Image 1 (cartoon, chains in turn red, green):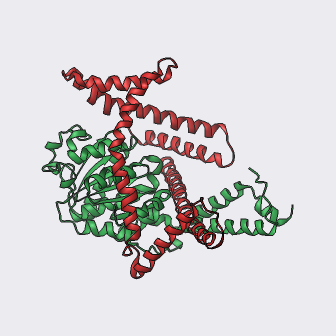
Image 2 (cartoon, one colour; image 1 turned 90 degrees about the horizontal axis):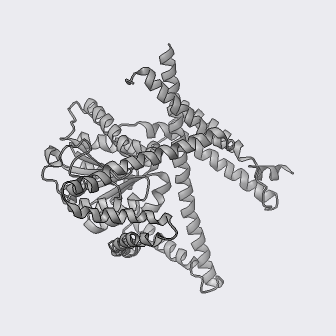
Image 3 (cartoon, one colour; image 1 turned 180 degrees about the vertical axis):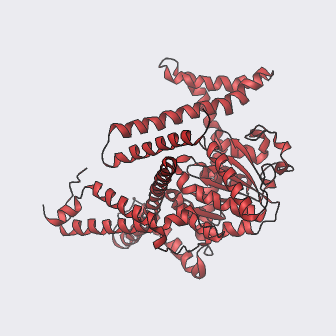
Length: 212
Length: 284
């Protein structure tokens, strides 16, 4: 079928109906929502399966093996061994590719430590990190925030007296963090909603132009 | 049940309905409201980075998101790419999201056409930008590209050899690009930080969804030289490149939604405190 205004309007109308079906969940769960949900999961899984074949299996296994590079069959066999997980008797086969895969995390461990521990530690103590003219003040607040936050998670000593007071400041710091996350989350969800409203608006305009 | 208990036990569908009405109203009458978008240092630093690039410099843009976060991330992709094309900075595009390829193709096509019209010069595939495609397993792809782009991408998305694309001449790995910008909605951002920046030390900036933004602030100044968070960040970038578009259009609706939620939080708390801090029986 050639792409034309009729085809475009059919697809866009379908997308608009699926949008409405998805939003209907806000009222309560219903068959229209379930249909839209299952459609997304099914289409997504099918698309990904085909994509994996075209971007991985074919260029990295099928083509090289046919071209005589037989050693590519080894990762192919390892990959196939993963499927033994579905057999209770033979599931031990799958441990070998999993072990190999997890073994590659050796690359990640030092990089992870460097990035998420050492670098963060040094950044915390760097008072020049901050915003605007009050850089040093923000830097000190960051240090205080982190220390009090850590104290809150120190459970080997009862949170009483001065220690309890510091832990309480830690709770407020954590709450500020959660508040910022919540604010950003609201922004994210509203962005998605506004984009859908904009889409429905453009669908309305498209319908109007088509029928006039 | 007194008024305060009712306030606490308010059926959440009323909240949804109220939000729907308020946000729709603010969106459709957006031209009647003006929202000042104040730019922040973390967004400005990405702008300055591209502004400071020489024509012919290359950046790697990784579009690591899928259609579910298109609304938030497309505006920042568009604004950054327009800026690159305005500066004559060449864009090497890649996606590490399995659902990203079709979307990236679309955004590249649309923004290059828009840039050509805006800046009055041709923006062509292979010279000003290219799309090298998608490969699964982001961590390995990021590590592989650090050695040579051709390890995972011997050909571009359209099956042309990378060596046949003028933009890829003398481009071997991250050393040959000015920096990496990842527009991301998932854990790929962590992989760019751990396997990309920590391993190869290339300049890295992220554009992330609002939900993710607070998680990446601690990396600013060490792993990241810039961060664009959600629609607000995208609106800032649109302002900086003087091309207000979707993100700026949506800001009145954002403000209205936030105010509505603040209002409901206040109502809920008043109800909670005045009803003697009883645990509410939520309707649905």
